[in-house]
Image (cartoon, rainbow, N blue to C red; front, side):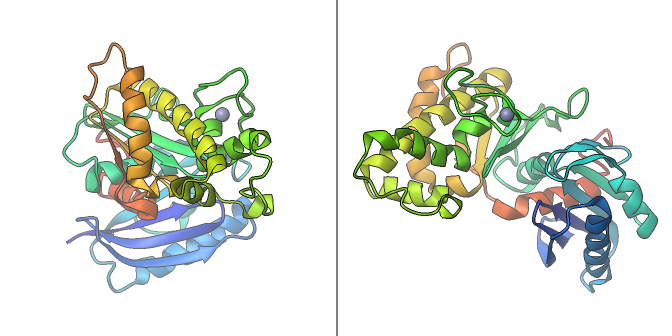
Length: 319
Ligand SMILES: [Zn+2]
């Protein structure tokens, strides 16, 4: 069976995995990133991918697939713009091709994760599929009629930055107000908890340093029935439902998969959104989109990047 190297380039670490054509992860090499300059990241990538390429399980290699944050030109593999790394026109694909005598493919990380979940996870067997990763932000991707949609300038799937509360919402990292990401990511849940705090003067929910306060703590407190956490959770799931109903209006997918840390409490989350999403769904026949929890978790990015290498690009047209 062929294998490929699937690489997930994150803001804090690099993972390079040896992955079989059936989606099985054979080996993973992970290294933390300290310096985010292009040269420093390039050195870590070459070193980590080099170990994966030499791994005895890396047999009959189809190529190297790499998922990176940012807006990426898929044919050259150049990162046109990445706010995470503060890169502009970084020649990531060219740099890797100069070090490895293998086909190299570079794609946006969220789009790679979507391809992974579509091929090996809960999207399998569907033709119209959306993945949303609810973490510190919201990443995503859209499959329409069996093809990952990249868009005119590779920006399709930036679902996190459609505005759902342009007045009165939280300010997003992108500069707009009330983006879906600002309202309905893990960070959004924390912001909702702060926003409703004045109504719960005796609550101790937020009595920790803000950098230690995770969305998981608030979600768990809500599950345990804490009034303050439940109020935040209700506002969070209300905003999540608006975004999901909008996606249904745009794409009418068969399945929307929710990934990321917030979605680990599957039933608690899905029970809160399904009814509301149905109420907000108007012209599209109700109940024709299943909302489920994603299956591949943190591995979706690597598996999707390897899938890109197996099929010769993010789309069957080789882009
Ligand atoms: Zn935004």
